[in-house]
Figure (tube, rainbow, N blue to C red):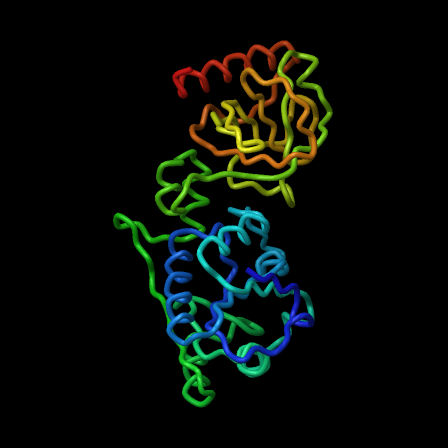
Length: 304
């Protein structure tokens, strides 16, 4: 899949099948959109194109939400679904001023030369969110492309949405989140050096930073961690580590029966069970005792 970073790197296409959105988490609803998109692209003999944003509109306007997937994972998931091109637009001040009409005329019609455009029926675009499917449909009738919309996707009576998934994750309902995501929930990233305070109390950890300090999960969890194609059991804390006066949200995992140097390696942490909420302890000794109990709880969950 070709990644196109910015409209300035986009050369006018000879035609495409297009969809637009944040695609955070690439959940089951997004996957259905992509399936329809790639099917239509094959029918029209044009490339399938997904347009997403490097800064989400919510973040730009000061209403950031915890992301369900980082950019790397989103890109890999889109590629696995058969998307041909991923256009990443930077949502900045200038782009936020683009009217809905200009967005259709200049980007969808002139630059992308869309022959088919599929969006969710609640998708809004353009300045002040004035663009919707009905405006797109009016242009489609005049502009030589077809417009289509996808309504709510439901699984076992539950509407699939990123908000619903975040809510389930926040209470540790990983089975329900997995149902809507279409896969187990995970956080991935590069293993970074930490303060190494865990080593001093007998629980060395691997550490992964949380972008913008926002995470849909907070607390202590039983997890599976994949590093270099090998899966390990562990117990994980996601939070600000109040006992040590932490300020940034960090993911720390104590891996069972593990003693390797893996700084700089990529790790995927799969969340399986919530153990408890994060809390502040009066001393390192109290923290050490609690981590031992947390590890015991995680091992009991995994039956190891």
